[in-house]
Image 1 (spheres, rainbow, N blue to C red):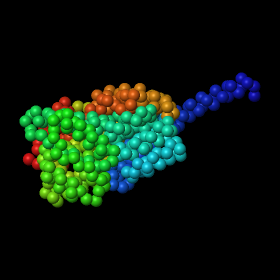
Image 2 (image 1 turned 120 degrees about the horizontal axis):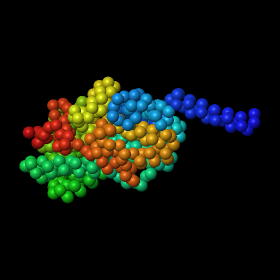
Image 3 (image 1 turned 180 degrees about the vertical axis):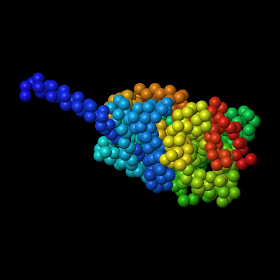
Image 4 (image 1 turned 60 degrees about the vertical axis):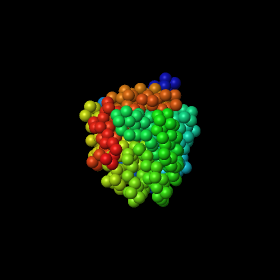
Length: 413
């Protein structure tokens, strides 16, 4: 075979390889780290439904106004299909770190999504940074996560400073409307989520003129909250602001009921107060609860894509999208869009595509202005909403631009 024949043969093989990739629709492996067992297992179960719904949208072809939805697979990679590889961190940051390294070194994932617990997102994203693999924090909200000068960390949803500002904006509005809101109580667990949340809320309370009459830090997954609830009952703040995961949220509500303490108002930092397991256990005692959120299902009346995506999710999960699952689902669509534009599974190229993301809000299911990332990897346009649990379901009450009801205030009136 002469040189010309060798070159022609190489060109043919290259062409066949390209065609094979386009026609064979190879898989693109993405890691998904969530708590699939342990105290927050329900969050992981719901996350799996949300992530798999998003993969269905990416891999199929749907007439929905969302990135990658109308193409069957990743068009930039010849129709390649997304394959999720799940890992269970069990709520343990070190377990999360080990699982991330396994996904990267053994399963060869090109990106990782996670992880609900901010403490786990912290360790997982550090591992991703070392390996040059993009990490997209879907539903971890600690403000410190995007302030570590990491090149491969991204978060499309709001962090707790953004959420807390929305919560205090709402309190200011209600106070202006004549509601008595002078004092607040902080109740927070002792991991990065709770401590960062309380630091933000303490600062905002001082700036906005609210007196903090209870400032209670407790041990995460504590077997008893009796003394803490007695302190809350004695202080009796106008608004109780809990930052708690599922097990603690359930115990808090049960203990308040046992001790006869009915908060005037509960304004939660989501987490356990956005988890189905909490409402299955103590939902009858939470009528009037207000929570911050990233998602408003009420916007489906104005944006058809929300209803279409919610229908797909509901077929899997048997319930509507919520604050957590909407962010999880959106994370898959964002990473798929970046891979599509990168036309590659190389970590650095995906990172560059994520950094260049500029998706208008109306091309998401979220009530955000847009999805784009600052140099720190945070989306500054992830506008939060407030939702209230009334009659067994959540309704949007703030801001007025998306609200469908006025707040019941006080909640136990």
